[in-house]
Image 1 (cartoon, rainbow, N blue to C red):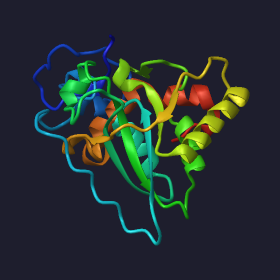
Image 2 (cartoon, one colour):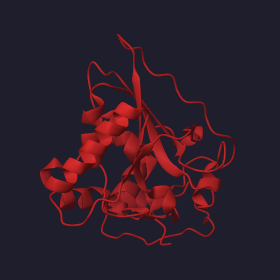
Image 3 (cartoon, rainbow, N blue to C red):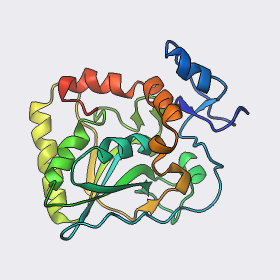
Length: 239
């Protein structure tokens, strides 16, 4: 596979997954990140240890609900959904695989079958599941199989993991409507399936865009995510 431009935590080269360097980014960002090897989903903390416990969601006035979306790099999916009014928390993790409690290294080996995904806790009195699905479409490229932008491989596939029959119905109807009205020619390959067990990722992946804003910006810009989203969705692309 062609790996991606996610920045590594140190100046030492990391094994096996260095990728294409992007040029033309701002001098300041390059100065900070140039010493880092460009690798897929390498965090700024050591890549060992067990998966983290999901953080507690802020209190809501009434019952909360959950949604799970796979949209490539879970750092970016977290950032895109944290902006949505009514979303109470986002947790990066792994789902759709065949082993229990996978580590990041196991998932990124492409041997466990998991996808990087984000579990969203939301207040249904403030935002509906259908609205979250519509937002999700405009944060991804639904035309590429086992890839999102510069990240390549099955862990980066796109999928909607419905929590119950009603979510499944809503997501399937949304996909069918999008097929008829999409602003691009390519077919939609995003899966709509019932949810499997969701395993929270290691703590250093959680809120990565907040903890490491410069590295995150360097990765996201270098990966071409927002440029591709604008190409696909125009002004409707999520920002």
